[in-house]
Image (cartoon, rainbow, N blue to C red):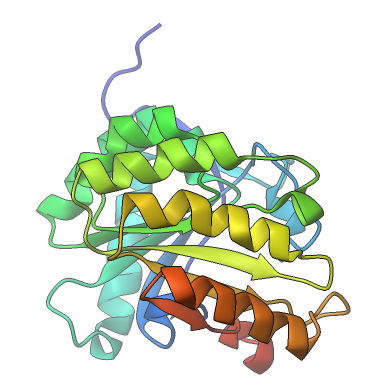
Length: 244
């Protein structure tokens, strides 16, 4: 059955205003839209509740999501200095809901919002369907040491789609823990280096009991920097300051 426009629904846990706490947009105001449900489970996930679609998830139409975004933007407009404030779609995994995004994202762009997709970088077929509506793509590289599975091929195909569609405002994040190995960093570099010299690679050290040794973090950075011009070590500021 094909649902009429505005009746298509997806599950959400929350829609809220805050400041971006990680990577290249750290400190900038955003409206966050958190989908429920994810296709993988990583040990360091900081929103474990969003991995599954529980009874607490609320199903909303695209119209309802837009209304909530507009209310939040009106309330917090003074915090936005850009003429095009960005809406961060996170989760869970937003790309599980491509039909919903295909309807929602172009409507938001028409209203003057930038679209920021935070993704685990595995659902390349889904990305291909919505990439033309994405302004910013924050792509994770999920390392086997913490996610219990290899996603190298998926990440490679995902990154190729970003590059072929000339998404200039895109970057890669790697969460670094005490279990991260140099072999994993080498494999990350092996995938990224031949494809692009422009994209930024963010090494994001865990801040909990799994935080990496500083020597290893330096080793990983030094190795990656030899091959990729834009490598950064950046922590999750929202965890430090305990903000939503």
